[in-house]
Structure formats: structure tokens, C-alpha cells
Amino acid sequence: MAVATQKPLPLAKAGLTRETSYVYTPPSHRLLFRGSLSVPGSRLLLEGLTFTVSLKSSPAKLLENPLALALESMRGRTLALSGITRLDAVHLDRSTEVNLDIHPAASLTRLYFENQLCAEPITSEDGCTDVGVRVSIGSSGNEGPSDIVIYGKLADEPQSTSTPTSTSKQPTLPPLKLLVARILPTPPPRATRLPRPDDPSPRVPPLVSFGKKRQATADPVHDTPSHKRQKSARALTRKDSASAIEEDPMLSRARELMKPPAKSLERSNSLSLRRSVSIADEDVFKVPSVPVRKVAEKAPEKVPDIAKELEKANKATIKRATMDYLTAIGLTKDNPEFKDIFNFVYRGAEFAMRAQMKARAVDTRLVDKFIRAHADMYVKGTVPRAK
Image 1: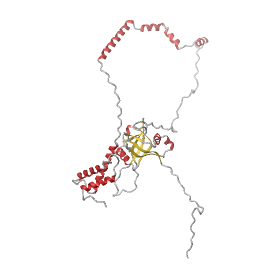
Image 2 (image 1 turned 90 degrees about the vertical axis):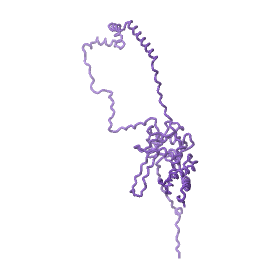
Image 3 (image 1 turned 30 degrees about the vertical axis):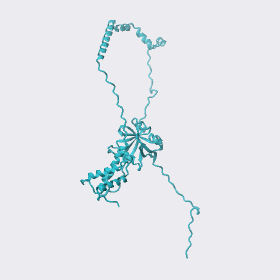
Image 4 (image 1 turned 180 degrees about the horizontal axis):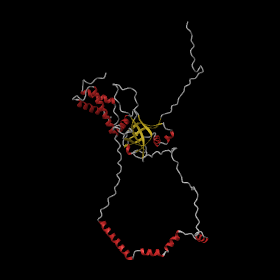
């Protein structure tokens, strides 16, 4: 005999409600701009750019940051590429760390920044690149105070706790973090030191002198009533003293004696006339003055050709794939026919992909397909077939 069991009632019929707790997690970064970068003189666009800033600082500081405000005001528009600039030739404002991220699908943008920032080794102490990509936020192609620079900095490597083994992989290069800084027309001002409690307080001279006032001693000769009346009757002024000096006969006689006679004046005039004539004669044979040296104008920075850079990167990709495939099938550089076979396979694959070399990044699957087809023709019988 089966025992009947009662089914449990649902929560709604039982008069119970399910409560869920939601914990709000504040965001760690703020999105400033997301868009593309236009190349002047070309229709190409470097897409997949995202500018963010860390929210460790207070929002009030972000409102006072001109770089963050300028990038947010450019939302929905396209930034303009101005060229390549050395970081030591400009003044940068690095007070706020603005990061730049590139979308993984934007292969053209990634190739451009790798060719510009990863071509030379980084030797600076702070781990930053020597050059940067200059971007104009204002009108296209015009350099001004609204320009920014995108440069690279070596990211801090996380310390690994695992012990190294003999089968471990080779150490890889540290990733390059892209940062953004604002170009300043003048060097940034130095931060003023705030006053400390142990600083001496400024001293102001007192308005009222301390101590006893000096008392004037009495003079029996000059303190008589008649002398005081004469002194107060008329005060001596500067004009009166000057007129009294001019009326002195001895001084007027001395001035007359100091004046040169008439003959000496005529002689001095004739000497000055001769001197002026001689100077005028000498001016005829004078060497003409050197023209004013003009300051050489700064040559405009050349904007890199994106098509050539893209073709160069695609050729390097095909060469690397050809070398890897020939090594995989056992054809090394020791083989006397390696050089000829490598050139035939590489040139054939490059010619087959000629329509994509200057337009976009080549498809690696098509590259492998063409390399396998050419290698099958020249090294027939040694190429492993895919099952």
C-alpha cells in the first residue's frame, strides 16, 4: 500500500516572499571618449579607441582637469591625427593618468601604434617611450594648445609565486600601457609648499615705536621771544633758497668766468663741421651692413603614410608565416635550396594577397592557405597533409 505524500506549497501560496540583497559596487574608471582617429589626407580611420580615467581621485578634481573635460566634450566626433612628436621637445601635463585601450578587433589601429611606439627599445628611467602620437582635439591638422600626446609606458609585471621549472616557457616582453597627456605651451608651474606649524610667522614693523620719546634741550640763545617771532613770521622755502643763491654776486661772477669765449666756440663749431665731413666721406667706402638674420620657421611635421605602414606590417606577417611553415615541414636554412624556395613561396603568397596589402590587415587564414599551396608545388611529397 503506497503512502500518500503532500506536495509542498509554492512560496506565493504559502504567503512567503523571496528577498534578494543587492550590493552596489562603485565603478573604478570613468569613460571619457570612445571613437576613432582620422588621418589627414586619407579616408582611413583608426577605430576602437577608448579613453578612461581612474576614479581614485574625487569627482571635484576631475571637473577641474582640462584634459578630461576636453575628451568628454568630443563625444560623438572624430579626433584628428597630427603626427609624431618627441616627448622631450614638449611640455606635458601628467597630473592625471588617462588610459587608452584599443579594441581587440581593431587590427589596423593596433598595427599603427605598434609600429610607432614599439619600433625602438625603451631606455628611459621611467619606462616611457621617447616618442608619442600627437592628436589634435580642435580643428583638423592645426596644432594648438588643445593638442594631446599618446605615449607608451611599460606596465608593472605582477610577481609570480610559482617556482621556475625546466619546461617553463621563455620570458615574454612586458605589455605596453598607453597613456594620454596634455601639451602645455609653457612648463607646468611648481607646486607651492603649504605652510607648516613650525614655519616662522611674518613680522610687520610696529606703527608706534616703543620706548620714551626724546626731549629737546632748551637753548637760551635761540629760544628768546624775538627770535621765535622772526622764525614764525616767514618760513624759508626751496624757491627762496634758490633765488638767494642766484643773487649772490660771487656765484654769478664765477658763472661768467666758466663760460668759454666766442673764439673758442667758433673753433669748436669748425672742428665739429670737419669731423662731420670726414665721417660723411668715410661712409662712401663703408661696408654695407649685414642683413638681419631671420629665424628659420619650424618645418611642419610630416604625417606618416598609413598605407605604407600597413603594407610594411603585412609583408612582415607573410614573411613570418612563411618561415614558420617551412621550419615546420623540416626545411631549414641548412638546406641549399632553402633560399630559393623561401623566395618563391613568399613572393607567390604576397602576390596573391596584393589586393589587401594596402587596404587592411591580411587574413592569417588566407595567408596560411596560399603558403601551403605554393610550398606543395615546390616541395611536393614533404608537405604534411591535413586530415
